[in-house]
Length: 435
Image (tube, rainbow, N blue to C red; front, side, top):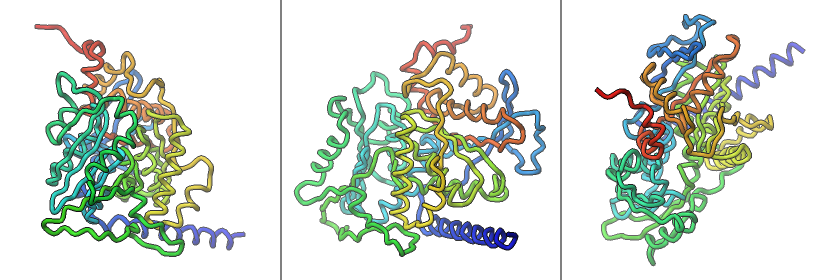
């Protein structure tokens, strides 16, 4: 029995090292949008009340002097990655933008985006809601790389441009689309993509250019079909690639996995300490990336995703789909053995403490965000990151012997400006006395 256990442990260790080496090659053999995966990690102590205290230089591991009777959680400050781009958007575009440029696709249409590369110029078209963080992120990151973006926004132009809408207008070319047309997004983008392609172009989906991976071949690069796309002067052939909405594609997982590899370094969160990772979930892509990375790297981390835009069935379906696509696109055969050992999946999808229709703000939440900002200097928004914050507080208020809690702050600062327009009564209550 002893020899059997030793042999089993040796096999597990070898499999773990093999997975780590594979992911290391997968991440290091490519270009990225972000120059480095680095991010700040702060510690938030909370007591009854609640009252908050922020530690911007926390020690990790056994050196942590925090008393057991004081509750705390770590905050990964991805909200500080870029002054105008949400952290989760930056992570999802981290591995995607360079990939499109590398393979010289002439036109790329997301379910919410269209890229166009004509001769040596790259243009991008995307769509989203009036206050879409996604379209703003695309516009800003493209402008920083000399890429022209065209943004199709749902509904009517607001009387006053603010928040993400203002940034989309400043950095990109905005067109407002009637809601009746926007309701059928795929048909809208298909029609648009065909009009951009013209008579000499073609419209492709991501599956059209990525070959199914071989059952036996192990490669650190995705299987992209060779495309004969000349970039010589005078060639105006347009190939439009259609990808899924919100960067919710397997390639978008790469940037999140890169983040986890960084955080799991020994001088940071490490690879041995149990952790409960909390994140707000819109499409769920970031949460799935966190869970997949933790499993592939053999980390004792549990991922808790607060469901905001869908039911648990929808999120589990998205989880299975993205994992399957990631396995196919990047030739990762070992995913099945680590992901599907249990029916629960790789993410704990949890309800928000006060469920509501997506996008709604409830009474008292704006004041809670204000209290957090005044006591810690951290701004959370009532739609997304407050949900993760409250869940992190709940999980870190349990027994001291429980795993430590980490919240991934995905950003959302600019979203507060749009919410202030929509919920004037709630934000109006922040007013103090007038001198």
